[in-house]
Length: 358
Ligand SMILES: O=C(O)CCC(=O)C(=O)O
Ligand SMILES: [Fe+2]
Image 1: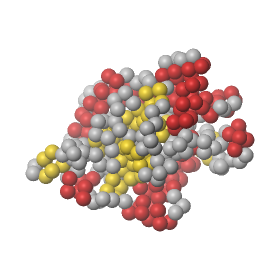
Image 2 (image 1 turned 90 degrees about the horizontal axis):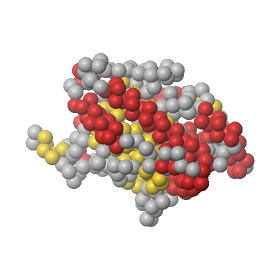
Image 3 (image 1 turned 60 degrees about the horizontal axis):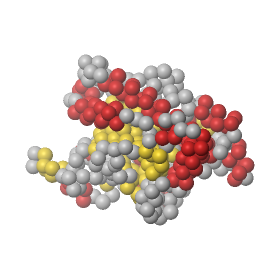
């Protein structure tokens, strides 16, 4: 683990889990994971096993997708509904700052969070973020894929499907490491694995377009307001511009998730916080605006660089019971959370966040 002061997100090597290491090396990596990820709910993972050529192709393809004319992208429109959360959205449907506001009990903080100009809900069209959501073609939970016609972007479906399943393999290895790090009983481990079939995971391609540097004078502005993910955990790949930050639970500040090509950032989401009875906490994170230093001129207006990122949300199956595991309840003498399901939890949060900012 590299932990040079409290402003650096710790790094852990999970190759023992992705490349079939022996029990001893797995146990050592699992202990390291607990030490690294417990304080803030986030960790940088090396040895993730996703081939860098595949990641490069994914970022190249994402750029090609978002470079298409709007009418082409709109051939796979995200429906105007909560489900399926699939296809192309010109304006994001998740409202980060609003969800952050839901998560806090402190009324003053709630108001502050709602005031922060969330990139995804800004009325300034220059601040739009676009995304494309992809899932399993065998998702049994009313989440069918919405694909572009093949001739619009040949190979897109094939590549993103390959990436989806490759990331599923990596996420199962990370889940195994998390399970081992918690010291769950065999029965609990089997249960937690069984409700993560992978069919409810979600791959998101994100494009944050360039912003006129003038707009950056608004100090309240962020690309994506602070929030926690609903998922069990999230894998996050980003381009070289950076901007992703995780809350430091000790200092109250934010730590930069510095882009490193061989590293994926992993953050805990609401579902795994509950399963682990709070052993791991869901990480608060946000995206600030990088590129102040690398601005260019577009038709006379100075603009920042664009940003591309690829989050992969590891979601439990919709109807699996999400409750603190019994051995952790015994260890802590109480259950910190009521049982729920991913279906109930995410529907409630989605509806609340859509209503809380107009
Ligand atoms: O773009 C990023 O780096 C973060 C995206 C994110 O946090 C989300 O989509 O939930
Ligand atoms: Fe997020």
